Image (cartoon, rainbow, N blue to C red; front, side):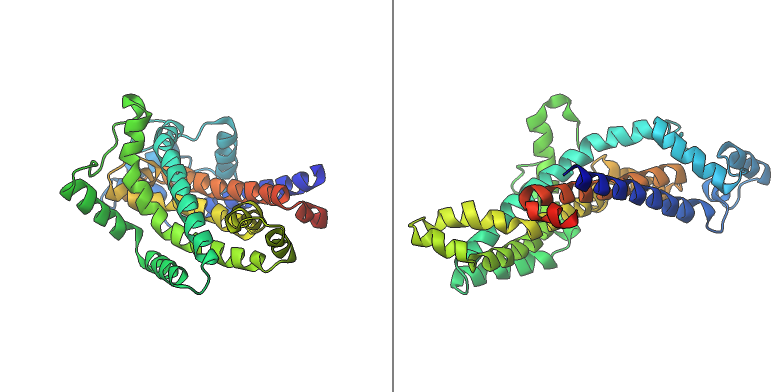
Length: 316
């Protein structure tokens, strides 16, 4: 097990290094003057030159890259040109909203997908199966932003059960904060839940054909117990794979949904930084999202070994 984790950890580190190089190349070395972009086309040349020195653009590329990596390792991400404050403080402030939003959306996705997928598999080729798969097909076709607007119209404008947008922070309590994130989380979860439900159904149907399932039924175990205690666990490997990728997609999907609901999260920060040409914020936020994706994949690999020990044995 230790060798398995060591190999995965080395892969994680190598991937993060490669990702940092790509992010740096895309945002720092491509043709164009970043200082000129920040100042605008009508800025005075002296002001542009002074900003270039302030941003360190007069230094060689490898020096700028090393300073950036060293800053990330030490927690110094630089100062935002637009907000005139440390980038790390901006990111931490926005993550306090984005991470709970993504986790809540992932919880909705998992619960809905497992219920729909297992229920559809237990009614294979029957009316319930066809109806549920039809709903998942519809869910996959709905854009997140459109569903978000629909939720606002129904639950905020018509029924007035929830606020149409905004977030007052966690100072009013966890329940109040979760209530403000409920509709955005549902908007994020609907598409991912539809995809995961179809994958869960296929995985469960495949496992249901195994000999141990027939043996359990022959021993008198109820169908519900067979499905939830035996079949689902053995069907979880492809499901966990997709869940890991979906959590990464949920983090990236917050960029659109947070703007629809006017939430001050990381997605809205990235959108504002792109609009304001604040490349320092964009660079660090993109690297953070990429690192989250890599770390989630690492966690999924470890979960593989927990769910099915044969994986780490074959890997070693």
